[in-house]
Length: 104
Image (cartoon, rainbow, N blue to C red; front, side, top):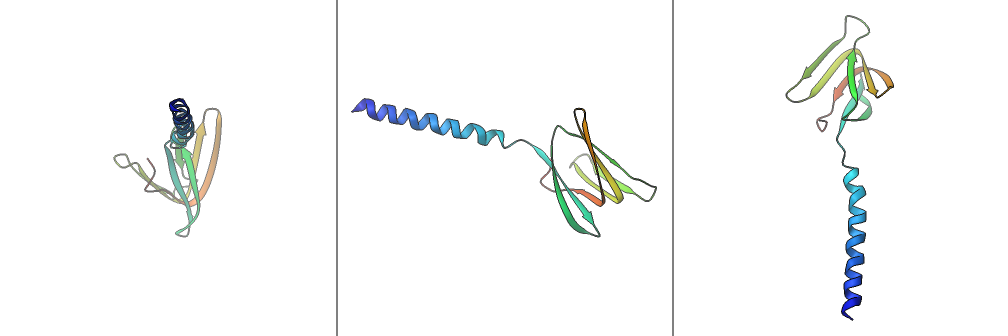
């Protein structure tokens, strides 16, 4: 009878660890950017932390602010957000781009 309980306990422990491993992988760090137009948020963009980010302006009317101590980004005037991961890149244009408070 002792062996049945030991085997059942071992099965429960193995199952718990196998379910916990994928949950830890989902907790990867990411940055969140809000794409806005006229002050209203149109989209939320989630980007892996390892992605290279550049902010550009198509003309001289654009303005961007970055606070290195908090990691906050705010860009206006038709800002272009360029994301690069490895050899792949994508550009997104919005009236305003703001990093969300939960991003790092």
